[in-house]
Image 1 (cartoon, one colour):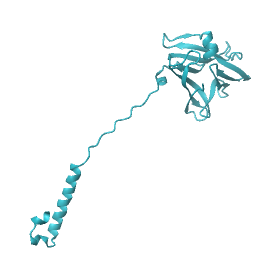
Image 2 (cartoon, rainbow, N blue to C red):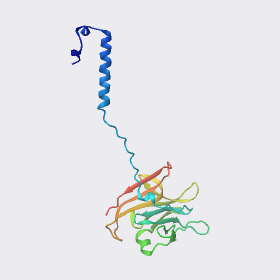
Image 3 (cartoon, rainbow, N blue to C red):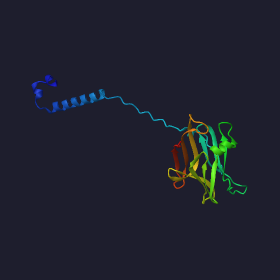
Image 4 (cartoon, rainbow, N blue to C red):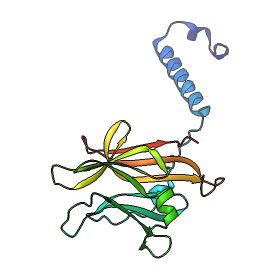
Length: 211
């Protein structure tokens, strides 16, 4: 359509006209790009999901504490400690003692009831050597724990295999949803967390409990 506005002299090759046409076409293209450019939207940052167990209180570390256990029911925490005599020697007949820290109440230390100790959170121990023991929590016998003395500092620590690696166990968390009972709770998963004995990095594993 631009041809109709040009006389015959302008149809002859002319460097000035060629440049003008090039500039005109370029401006037209730039205008089209600007006019029909789609709006851009800024992507919103994805909110980080925080697991409920990572909001629970952490028991104050003490030299005897081996690891602790928490559940979704409340923040009350079961603490597992090394059992030593007055001379600091491990009591081989009962190397580990267990008690509550009632964070959901007043934070007081309390003993487990008989049922809690025998059928749930107590620990079964088998001596292997004078300085090593195999054990498991009474409510879940399939996961073997190892109480062993560290040759470096002569301190005892609780070991567990987490993600196929030997790990110093620090925390056990049990996700329990509604729908079960005291004797058969609706356990969704057990989470174990600790420190890799080789790399020193944090290790974590979740696994389902077979019913």
